[in-house]
Amino acid sequence: MEIFKEFRIEAAHRLPNVPDGHKCSRLHGHSFRIAVHVTGEVGADTGWVRDFADVAAAFGPLFDQLDHRYLNEVPGLENPTSEHLARWVWERLEGPLPGLSRIVVHETCTSGCEYRGSTGPQYPHPT
Image (cartoon, rainbow, N blue to C red):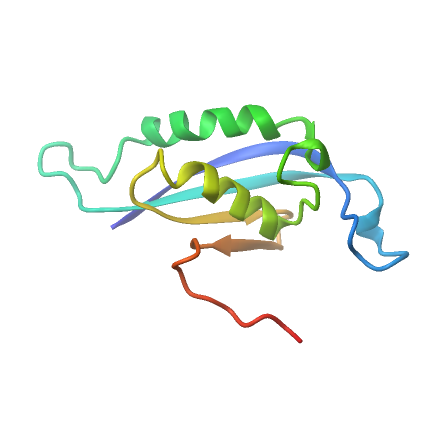
């Protein structure tokens, strides 16, 4: 069974590695939605995979580092694409949150990405 908890952060960024003139090279902000998914067995006594409060507690320090921040200044997010943000979150939750199965980042209402760790499905890099 898989559960998830969503978090919303407000943050500014710019993408330094896009082609000249690309709109995302300019400073702009997003209302990011980050969903943390955890997979596991449903506990016989609790009736849940994991307490949602445990997920929130694990994400709390990351929330403090990301919310109302300029993401380019966060160590490890110098090129803060949704893809890099998803991997950044994964790398910080993988140890403290057993059963972590995927991170989903919604950059806008219609655009985002999903990361399942280095052992998850691998997608070919476009050439």
